[in-house]
Length: 544
Image (cartoon, rainbow, N blue to C red):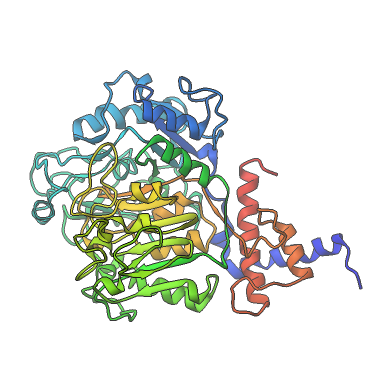
């Protein structure tokens, strides 16, 4: 019997109605991040910042650029720091007083005067603005691992990425700071309440975002802070932070290309590959606690355990499918014969070459033990490996390197480590990294990017902030916060959008989504989850 479209719609609605059982009520209760919840911050006195903001938000909102630019996300809000009357802040590294007077206070004032304090959920910083805030009394802290360790152990490390400080915009963290141990909440790091979550950020209201929080020492005051109070006003919840993403790269054109790549990402899941290049590991997913000696399996305290990151991602994909096993490239061993590189650069014929387009680059890089491809011969893979790969749309980089996000704003790298900026220049789209020495137990946990972005339905900003365990520290998220991935295996009718039409098409002709060579209800449930998530996102953005 031929089934008409009305009956297919009825079947689809029944299928979608079952979604509550599949995902649980919290996972579908709220939409994901939308354009009118984003504030782009730029300074028209800094040409790079102006041009990046114009390309993202459009010339109608960002005047003085090239003109005639429609913008990738014209529905976002914008704020020109020049309009606040504060002195311009040069790119690279700024000090804490300038951060407060020239950046934090103007943004606070703008949000309050524009009535956006509780509406905006995400801030976007632009190329040309500083990306690091210097320690208040030990200027080289952060750039020197040994000095950073000393400051941290002494409970007096205040250096952080600009974005990590802005995430707690309404908390005056440096109040009381006088160079003593734990004399302000700027000392050390603050546990991120959104870390490891899977729900959209809008699940948590912003009602108390401007209220000072009751921070207490987590195990060692001045090294880690969190809130334990049950008072909804003074507890730090995901609703009390701003997700902050940066649009940056080596050149303005690199950032424009990044923005363009982010606008509508369709990934061919049958050809996309992932790299999990570990080193000196036993290759086994080690239970925690206790932590192991592996960099990807350490944590600050028991409440911050993500798991054995690289092995966890490998095993998740092998168990779930979605990416072909042949395209899951995991290596646990050391030395150049086990260092994974791409085909675009030659490293004296050394290393394991992966030619497939990468969707995830997770790598020990310069921290890979033993010899590395190329050795002292140019090019040396320890600092150039990210430039050697072919990249799929929406490719993400998160490496086990302390300074992989240092080289923005004219700064150079440290310790011969690969840079997110170079990854972007090579065709990458999103990066999670560190602007200062972070210590291995604070680096972003890529498993949550895999679950919530690559295989899930959160925006980049949301997925990135579920992966960052601490705020007011060294981490930074680079890329368009509003970007989402369309997985080709779920786009059943091939129109570049995952919607109810794809569910109609799947019911007519079931197809294999999880790449297990069987089309069954498991594939159907994956599709239902994506359809519902995208449906809410599109409605919130006025696309229906």
